[in-house]
Length: 280
Image (spheres, rainbow, N blue to C red):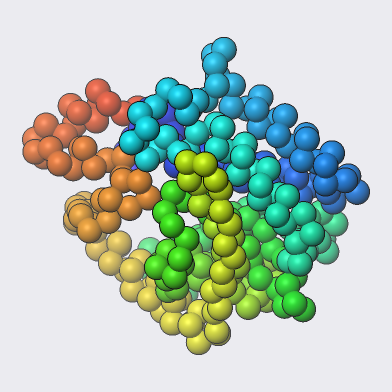
């Protein structure tokens, strides 16, 4: 990552998630403009079909993949089905999108970045940045909503992975600091993508001020550890995480002998400049 290497093409789970989020964001903005559910849904589906048509053929048509390939579930057909079923299920969502008091627009796909001066070990402050899917009002309380798509079965085991979780804590802090919106925690809207159906389950992760304070303290320790790696110009493998999120794209490189990794990187990867501080 420091040298700018990325895989050729986006990993399927990431690209599926991007299309899914873009559709839901578009829907929220259309409904904010007083458009009906049916009209907004029609526009979202049509635009998603256009975005997923590549070089005269559909992006990831299900028929083009072996039936036993689990990533084949993240297909164009299943993407459209998931968008339609989710928006139909939550067309009268009790969780209402908040309106940004400064911009007057719905609080969806919000880019945030803010400095944390207390950990400026190098003399320059660190910057936390990212995106919030949606900020909502639910039962007179404010939450960040995060939308997930997965091929895993949605049960307690799936949702337990998000509490505690780095992302959930960061989202809670970001809402409070960057958008001056105190939140109770995060609502996770998970979509299970299966062969013949898409299923949706909503779960909650609550964060107390004490938990947030503890997370910030832990963050400082991790940052100081990262600074030590920089000073030594060496980053140890975290090989217990190689399988997560569909598998790290660099796993095939790390499995090679260190003496030949550069050759495989040059052959199988490309270099791309990415600055997370620049909003997409």
